[in-house]
Length: 173
Image 1 (tube, one colour):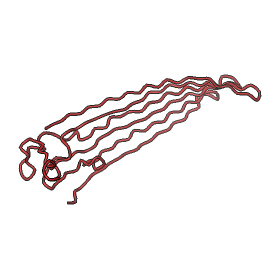
Image 2 (cartoon, rainbow, N blue to C red):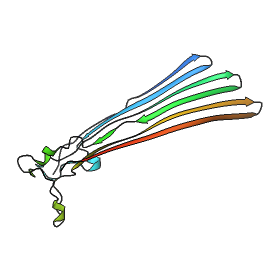
Image 3 (cartoon, rainbow, N blue to C red):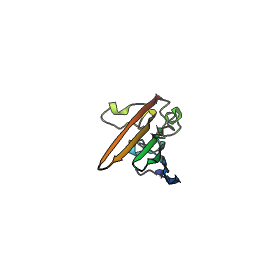
Image 4 (tube, one colour):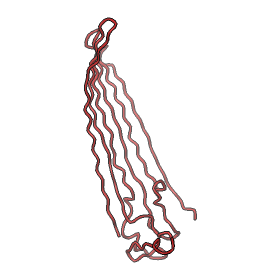
């Protein structure tokens, strides 16, 4: 059967460069990606049979940002410091609730996730009984000092990166 789907993805991106003085420049860029897909066909969370209400959507707000400051300290020495980050939670089937397994009509499973697939390869009447969410994020700080002397150049610097992740899963029935 053919079922309706709705999907909306927004990708606004901004970049700003500003010359504070002739020797100092600031650059900033960022994006915030909002995605809403109902049902979540990427992860096969659409309704399996007509009349069965169990289905899931995907909702996420992902972002990234970067800020840099470049300074000409002397005619032969330049320093650049950069800060950055990424993140944003992705929620898989946040709309999946117990009531989807206890509806009136064709899809009423009396509150149970009955696994029909155990009987002669019949598809289960629901895509999943679990919703989940996760986020992987990073934070970065870098600094580079460059020095030019005649035909030679020397760059020295450092970088620090922090990565975090969280996961959440909940089986409903």
